[in-house]
Length: 229
Image (cartoon, rainbow, N blue to C red; front, top):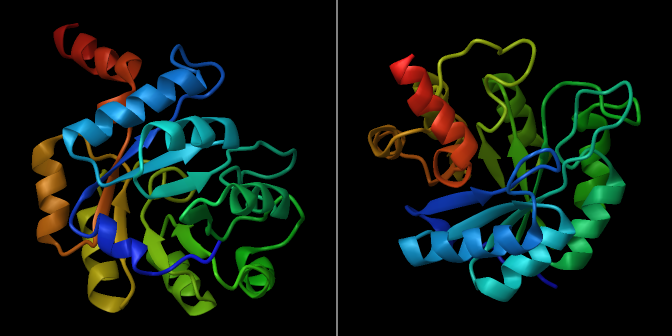
């Protein structure tokens, strides 16, 4: 399937909703994620971010929105778990997701290499595929841009050892990325309220992803409980 950059127009200025539930979470079910995605579409979402081929297949049955696809897989001796190897990229490519997102941090990947070592080969092999770089720092985003990623996300800011404790959403980082790089900047991570979503759009982001605040009732409940304890 040839992926056109026109797909970016479908999510421009709109909200992408992340519909994910890991095996240890109460809502872990492809059926539930499919209905979650349908609910998000009915609410006005312009795209879906989803984890795993089974969930993606079910979501495709329910909605016709562009999908940012990932596969979370934990490998020994590596902290990289968002689409970490060629195996996961192959599966997502074969499934035909519009955008494949992968960890683009400086961390060592399961094969012992860095993103700068592996992405040129990925870009060459999948020349017609759109790729999103999940970054945690400005420097990582700069490298991802230079490597040829089609869009840059702030997904992992605050979630790497060297960015832990960062206040999210990181408006300063988002503003710098929007200013410095002429590719779609997608704000993702720590957007909990409509007011915060509005803030990131005022900075000029191309699109934004919201997950937990919409699709994880357990975590939402915990926030309310914490407020009254």
